Image (cartoon, rainbow, N blue to C red):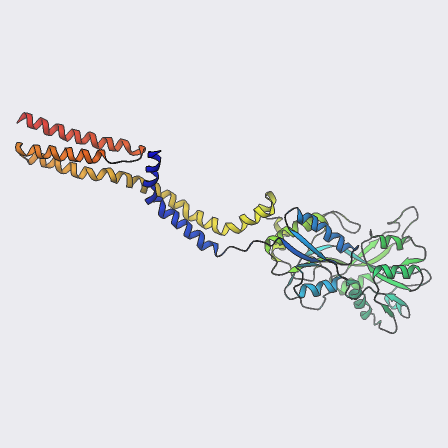
Length: 431
């Protein structure tokens, strides 16, 4: 125990400055560490029961497994979501492609397009609708105020010069519009929904309504990058009953996940993994792995999202829980430079420590050499004085303590003292 304590005291003057230098380096580097990612974020979804809200619930579950609390705010749709994002009231939101067409996005970035959102135009069976201008003189539900559905329909109507009062536009939600269409209270209704949604399935199987095919779908897609032409094959919904009874051309936009540009990079990386897991499987109109992508986005692509599309998840997040990967990622600004500093220091310090220990022994050789040289010049009467100096020197050397690894050098010094003493005694006898 005594020896260990002693070794530590001896090492402290050498290793102490190194430890102090490392601590100073840590304090300095700490100023540049990114803040930890928040454990609470807010997303604007859409109407409860809709696709946006359903996907938000799936995100919520996956994020909870990583220690992140996702708060879901139900809204009327994409327009309201975009407003909440612009006001900074939510961190991310689902936004239908094209909602902010021709409007510059400030402070917002996209993580990617998630899936196709077909635009369905259902009308009464007795009404013939082949083109948008055929809606003139009819009562049409175009989606609630603040929804992406209404924003898209208004855009298409404006391009076809359809205005009030030539068309009676009703800002109804999808449930109300569906019931009114089945009851014959309106002539047509637009919906943006998944082909698997109960609303679309119910309308496809209702004999009182028909699904319109967009004859000029290719023209719309050429005019707008955010629009895609999809084909619903004959009998795709039900082969036995042959629903739909003919091939249908649909216009589709994409659902984009949009975030604040200052959203923590670590959270962006985590969200990309969640989005990839939820939206990678194949759907009615997409192959496996087609989504998420950034081909149809109306927003600037987030830098972290771009890295994900190029390289996949960050290395640390592939093998570690999110909190651990995030901590190490933030600490690397400290660890890497300090490793570069410590490696050469650790190469220098051991030789310095050995030199310090040897110096405690070697300094006595200077006195021993003086006694040895003086013995060659001194007379017999002076040899007693030199022997006393050697005795004093040996007494002092016996009090020197060094680590065990340097003990052999201490014993060599004592042997050399005995050697000089022996020569002085032989000279005294010979004379």
